[in-house]
Image (cartoon, rainbow, N blue to C red; front, top):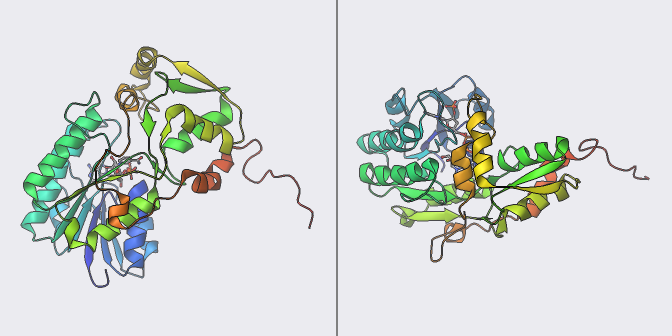
Length: 317
Ligand SMILES: NC(=O)c1ccc[n+]([C@@H]2O[C@H](COP(=O)([O-])OP(=O)(O)OC[C@H]3O[C@@H](n4cnc5c(N)ncnc54)[C@H](OP(=O)(O)O)[C@@H]3O)[C@@H](O)[C@H]2O)c1
């Protein structure tokens, strides 16, 4: 990666931060795009002086896209949203925005393009998130033939929104919700493994034009994931089953909040399996051995234990 210039759109996000760090460590110059370039300035500390440049990029209105892709050897598009907000609709962020990034990259002569989609992306999904992720994949492939698509399952790591959300809930609520029976299956994948898979894809020309499904080494249903939260937060919260229709009714009102903790679309997403499909190319095909949840979760869910992370019984020294 030494001497290469890599554009990372969505570089300030949860997955983007791991990728920018890995690229900088590998010696690449990184142009990191996000709408809020000020808030992305912390990315500079991930490399030597001048190695990482945060840039204002908005895939929806096109701001800064040409500047970012110009001179890049590769571009990775990480932009994704869980709920619409302002001009960021599912369609504008996942479909037309992705197409804009791919088209600009192709025009600028960028060598490689990686589109970060999601497991479960499908035109037939009940979730708009998943349907637009599928349409985004198609749009990118049309604009940049040879683009690599990666589809992660639920991504976990110290700053994730999934385990942290339920950990925080376990800390204050007497119960943890299980929507619609909680039998949908997930294959959580570690954020650093996702970043490593993309690094390896960039240095593997044969990965061009291929789609990879990124899941961790274990499959859990939603109930089992809530048991993991209870175990690592050292709580014993009851799992309470909530029918999907009732959760959707609640979510309807939550959607009026600026950052809704749950939306009807997320409920639809949680209702479908989120595991690597039979015969798909996986993490292993990109040379990555998946890290188990049990290794990483104790490192950050301990903050939700009674008394906090440092409330351990006294050790005699
Ligand atoms: N996290 C998961 O569990 C998970 C699972 C499966 C798939 N994925 C996919 O992985 C990708 C990265 O996820 P993440 O969790 O890292 O997301 P994230 O933390 O929400 O980060 C999103 C990034 O995109 C930027 N962004 C948002 N709208 C933009 C726009 N219109 N133009 C340019 N930049 C924009 C954000 O910065 P600004 O707000 O400053 O613009 C931020 O840097 C997404 O495509 C997501 O769908 C994530």
